[in-house]
Length: 193
Image 1 (tube, rainbow, N blue to C red):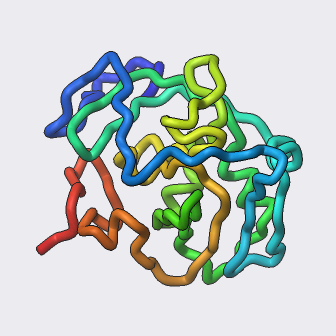
Image 2 (cartoon, rainbow, N blue to C red):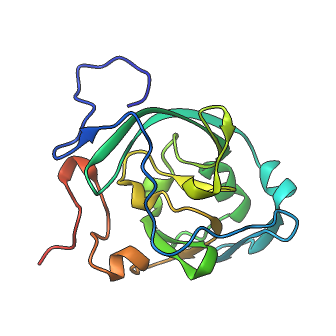
C-alpha cells in the first residue's frame, strides 16, 4: 500500500487508524550491544553463515513506505522504513529448493514463522531506521523484520537470525494461539478452532 494512490481500501477489517505508535511485546526490552550482535543463517541453505553488524548492513539497502496493522486492532499509516532487503539476505543464504518457510529468531529466544513466499515480496526488509531515525529498542531496534502485508507480530523485533525450513512450525505467538499466517485483510488473528 504505502504512498501510492489506489482505489483499494487501506484499512483492513477490524482496524482503527492511530497517529501514535503503540508499544506492544511480551517480556522486557533487551539491551543489545552491536559489537557482539550476530545474525545467523542456517537450515536448508547452501551457505549457512553468520554476519556481524557492519557486514549485515553491507548486504544492501532498501527504503519502503508502508502501513503497519497490529492484531490488536490499530493501524499506523505511511511508516518509512530503511534497512536491508530480505531478498539480499535470501541471495546470500542461497536456500535449497525444498525451503518453503522461515523461522525468524530474535533476542531472548523469541521466534516467528513466515512462509518464504511472503518474505520474498519486494517491500520486506530488516529495518534499522523508522521515519528517518534509528529504530528504538522499544520498537525492535537495532533490527526488526518488516513484513508490511501481514499483521505486525510477523514483523519480529530484535531479530538475530533465520532458519530456512521445509515445513511450517509455529513461533512464539503461534504457539500461544495466533494464526499461522496472519493476513490482516482476511482477519487471520487467531488459529482456527
